[in-house]
Length: 405
Image (cartoon, rainbow, N blue to C red; front, side, top):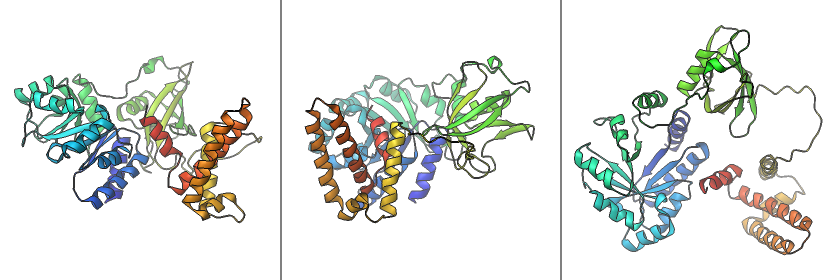
C-alpha cells in the first residue's frame, strides 16, 4: 500500500538512512504511474537523497523518474531501452543522474564491460547478488563507474562490503526493523567511513548550571520555529549523539527523558550548535507531532505582549501569501479576484501568468526599478495561484531548487 511505503520511507529518513532506493521495474504503465505518484509523495516527506529504479522504455520514462526529485534513475541491464532511446537519455542527462542495475549472478560483468556503459553515459553501477570474491574485488577496483551494492545482507557482511574503497553505498532492506544509528556506530569503530553524529566539543568544556545541566533551545529545522526549551546532562547529551534522537534530563523526575518515548512525538536531530559562551545548546530537529505536552506544536503559544510589525522574511511572506491563496481555493469568498481566477480555470490562470511575464520584460527596460518591483510581485502572485491550481507548494519549489545545486 502507498501509505505504508511512504511511512516506511519517512522512518528510514528520520532514523539514520543516508539515502533511499525506491524501485518498481514492472512494465505495466498504470503500475508505473502509481509508483511514481507514490515517489512524489515520499519526496515531500523526506530530506535525504533517493534513487528511483524503474522500467525505462523511452526517454519520457527516465525524465518522469528524475522529475520526482530523484538524484538518479536506475535502469536494469536486462530491461534497457533500444539504442536510440538510450542515446537520447544519455545525451539529455549527465552521468551522475544515470545508473545501471546488474544482476552479477545472472550476468557477471568485468570492469571492461561496465566501462562500456560508462562511455555511453551511465555513471553508476548498482550491483546485486554479489559474491565477495577476488574477481568481484578486481572488477569494482578497476571500473570507472561509481559502485553501489544492493544486498539483503543474509550471506554478505555489511562492513566487508563497505571496506571496498570503490563501494560508495549499500542498498538494503535489512534495517527495516533495526537500529540504523547503532549499526553505523559499529561501522565507524571498524574505521568504515560512514556519517554519524560526533561531538566536536567535549561535554567537559560546556559551562553548566549549578545543577550540572545545560539548557537546550529546540527549533524546527525547516522553519526555525522555537519548539521548546529543555535541559541535558552529560548522559543525555551522549545518548542524543549516539541515537540521533533528542534525549533530555528531567529535573522533576530526576531521570533521562527520551522525547517521544511515550507519545511517539520524537525529535530527530538535524544539527546541534552551542553559543559563544558554551553555556546553551541550540538543537534543530525534525519534530514528529507536537513538541508541547499540551498538544500544541510549540510550547511557546501563550502571548504576553505584542506590537504589530511587518515581517519581510522572503520565505515567510511567500508562504503566508500562498496560504491565503489556498484558503480562497478551499473556502471561496464572494468578490475575491483569486476565486475569479480559480473559477475561470487553468487557461485563464496561464494567460495571466503569460501577461505578467511580458509586463516584467517591459518594465525591466525602464531605468526606474519601481515598476519592475511591482510587476515581479504581480507575477509571483499569479504564479502562486498557478501552483495552487496544479497542486504544488513552496516546499516543492524550494526542494527542486536544492536538487539543482
